[in-house]
Image (cartoon, rainbow, N blue to C red):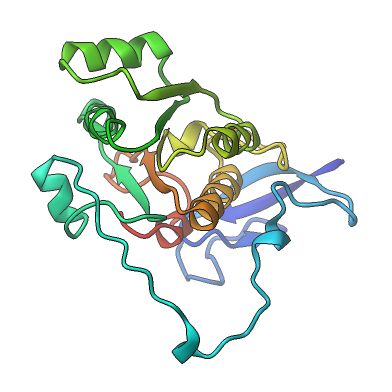
Length: 235
């Protein structure tokens, strides 16, 4: 695959062939970032069968069967409150915050509790399995049923998830994950957008509740394209 230079808007994710001071899509100033990306062949197949997830059957709204799926409590009252009463099947939650504020600690507590009732998997791309385990033991959490995976390749993460079939999963963090479909570095606008798209689609297709951990910039906003916030259900 040939590589070429493209410019991505950090605010809306729009792509441009050359740099310009203002994004023509969202009108933001000085928001374009240069990236070297690989150009896939015209007959290339998008990873994980994107087309397969599309439902082409048109139905009447009156014929749609509604399933009652109650929310699952995380046993953390404040987390339940911001989630509207608990965790919903197939929901995608993006959790951001300053380094060291407790994002990973909050989620390891949540998953250790949920793993006692349903299949749960914690995917770490920043810390080792030993670091995650030490944190859980320091907090005195039940760790016997929580599955851990250290991986940053999104195709491999989804492949393992399809085998393990977790009902709730954490990706820590989305900035460390990359897809083989692009050649740009992990954390770049294109990598975050494409990796998140694959993970969101997996969650919706399988009904897996998904937590994405996101970094924040020095201004306090979530790092990466603003389109990331629109792809998830809750920020």
